[in-house]
Length: 328
Image (cartoon, rainbow, N blue to C red):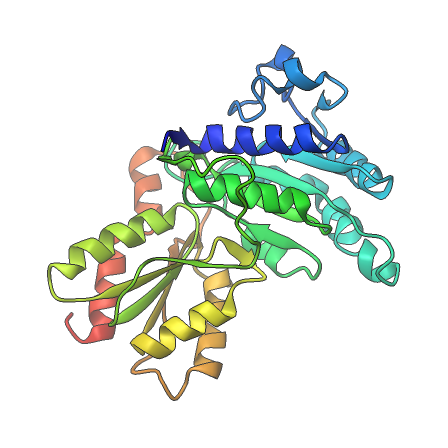
């Protein structure tokens, strides 16, 4: 099979959906051909195929982008709204949380709001504190939202198609450092169901539960520890909210130990919610406390050496695993 990058996978998924359904359109800053097809080129080439009515470049106003997307969704459209960097969602939180997420509840289920909110983030490229945060916990806390993040190109293609199909708002988080990663192209029509985790590596000693870019770290650590006789099972959530509780609990009941890992800061992160749920529902199976690894509780530094120190590192992951299995 041919390989594609995550950038290409997302572009193909959106292209496919637009070709099949005239109600699908994109809007956001710089997304059209005149502006270069998006800062990260996800919508490159689509203006030429579908015109600027369906690939709409907007003013620099996140409030206007999401407000327009909500209105379009209520009128029967399926907008894909790009918020260029995840930190900027703070500008349009009212439209996302008080409008998009609540319309179905406040209309007795009569008013779906099918919006995909694409946004990009990631630590490690020197973008500084106002452009690097993983804020998935903000949205996982809101009823009515799906929160999705792929770790590889194939999943990106399948998750994007499922996100566009969904009748409720989806926050689709893309990590800058994953855009160039290659995987086999699963081909047209491929979908990954929302709310379904993957287990890219099976193991018996501990369950390492993660998502997005840190899946790459988890797999590397699991491979290294296998040489030392420690068998790590890696669970890639893919959908953060609602997450695949059944797969997570089945994994932990098998291994008896669990570690949650995410790039977002450790305190009050989604890993804490998953850890609490594991301890409630797997208490009789656990051989020790559920452990957590996350980013440093501070703004992401701009200086390269400080930024690297901020990121959850493989040494810390290895240390937590070894402590959990009694081989520290």
